[in-house]
Length: 400
Image 1 (cartoon, helix red, strand yellow):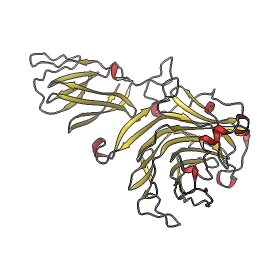
Image 2 (cartoon, helix red, strand yellow; image 1 turned 90 degrees about the horizontal axis):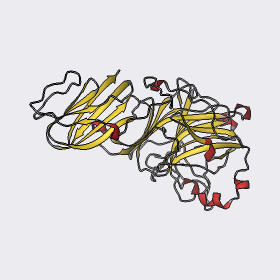
Image 3 (cartoon, one colour; image 1 turned 90 degrees about the vertical axis):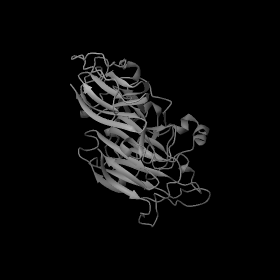
Image 4 (spheres, helix red, strand yellow; image 1 turned 180 degrees about the vertical axis):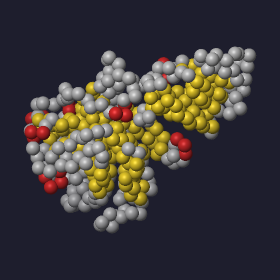
């Protein structure tokens, strides 16, 4: 991220609150407590925009700020507030200033068109980081790929220079560089970045879904009232070239979304209405929540195996199978019929059209036919992945 030098936690704690929070504006940063050596990272977001603002999603090595001989390792998606019709992709490598050495960071900034504008609608933003390449995708379309061996304008192989684990971060702040983000005008405040969901994948070459290189590690739908502190923490520092202090009070949860805000100091928080994500339109809205919560594995109703003497139930679609020939799944009315060829553990995962996991369970089954109720799922399109050992099957269905 341009001009960024994060303050050390130790330095922050040594500064008095009056000095540390002296700026006139408050931004926010959300970051994962754990770091990752490669992976895939997705977020469904409506970003913030406005002259002077930077709204971002990025990967970052936590000690990059130290400079000197500590490598700077960072991969960015940034909305530069003066133009919400595009985003900037960037890799930052090299070394920051420190230990008497100058700033030696390397950049490779590229601008990409966005439609609709970043602050006018939701997009699915994706970063893929492997030993061989870094990729940026928008709404499942790759817009940039930098490979190991490619070099920036100064001759640096930046993919090869990504040598440290990185955490996933989101922030909203105001740059002091008008040439980069546009002239500052605090009359636009407050502004907000809305995150519908985040997905993190492990890098597992050839072992991901359908032979891909990434396996889903976790999803956060932000449906709970409180932030999941096993995954996330919030920033409470500032950095050079920034008009704001990062405030935990500008990270809020409402209506199934996480909101990152930039405000005037003393006006932190969010009291507005979360914009609807059109991709959620197929899901009914209950009186208590703007989003239907995913069905947990404990809500699944599993019917015991049907013996060969059982009769088919035309309403439930139960069919007797003595021995299934192969692993097979199909939808029958409000049930997923699962044929298990041999006894063993079977994993069943159901995701909606956004990739949100609605059901995920691994259970031991004897050979036979089982019915798994999907009656509690909201209306919409779903994808089913069934796996037993090396046997796999995927299907999609529309729940009416």
